[in-house]
Length: 129
Image (cartoon, rainbow, N blue to C red; front, side, top):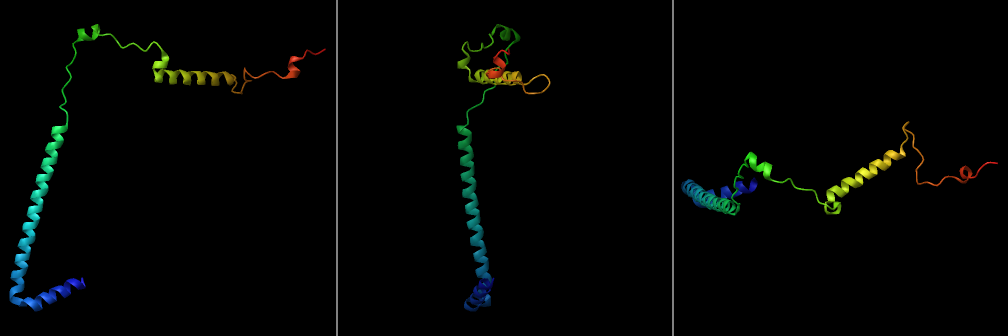
């Protein structure tokens, strides 16, 4: 703020009170012309960019609506014969198998049952005499 006051005071001393208003007017006109020129260049640049973007976008065609007879004649896509070809089906099968194995581990009362693959204890296998 003080720098501006010092510059204005020096301009008043050097140019005098008669020439200072005319200098301010000419400076304002110059800045207005400069701003107008930059706005014009900016507008041209933006319009060219918009035109280039429109030229690069592919034209979207509206797909024709199939007739009801055409839908009957078209075959539905068949699932792949080999489940390994469809990774989504393989993941779904793995999830089903994991869920089924978890269900086998839980007894109907909500308690955890003995795992079917676990070996029985030696005391239970020996016959009592």
